[in-house]
Image (cartoon, rainbow, N blue to C red; front, side):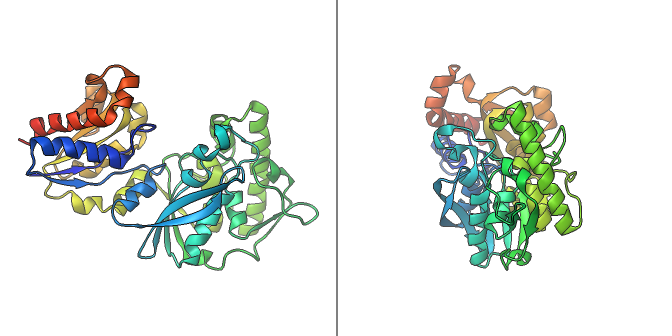
Length: 372
């Protein structure tokens, strides 16, 4: 018999690889002869690079800068002219010094540094996971790092961050990286928010990054000015493009200057790790994430895995820290059963502290039920 383990991370607790490894240990105790394929997944946020590394992508280490300009060390995946880059590990919320939000000055500049490194290595295709952004600069910082001049009324470069974009008066494309036009960029994102307006980057996501009502207004003004200049240079309006407002508007710049395509994160990751090739012949697929809830139904990893398996008829079960989905929701999602760790340890703190051991026990339960 063969089982494919394709869980996402248990956020703040275990990585996707650790979840899969713990499940494999439990299954192996009960059914040592079962062939186990570990394929940890992600939905385009943190864990995207880890998923690529787990299937043989080479880790490339880069010295870059975080969202507020501090030095950071980050890693992306490289294989056969393809790169997998994770915004969160460079300029994400987790990179804010002491966790202190800086909504007006945080920038995607460091992300551009990493993309430039990949271009310098001859990369032709980049998968960019944009979840977990700390900034609302419309991807302007990313483009500054790739050689775009964003200039004020005196012809001097404006400062980094969304607020400074209000001072931008012109763009200079002469210094753009020479290989930009030779790269295919796929943006992994599951939201369809536009750049501007009441459902845009500043209004919807700014408060999640520490922006006050006044800050949101400032950021909206900066993004509007940035969008106007981009439209003048590129000759097309992208402010209403679905998904342009994700990650503080980073996809907006990617669409305008990098000819990007936005796709659901889990679909891109499953393609990267060769999921479709690994599933045929399996008797069981196990997926999961820390919390299975209604947000999961909006394109999160477990639902994406189940959808990818649905046509094969292979049984799919899930693991979770907690599960708030009804049996009807699970059935509609194609998930036959869920194994929440809360069933084994109702106390949340103890469940988190002992998640690895609980997942091993859960692996045993899954093997006893589905692999005998």
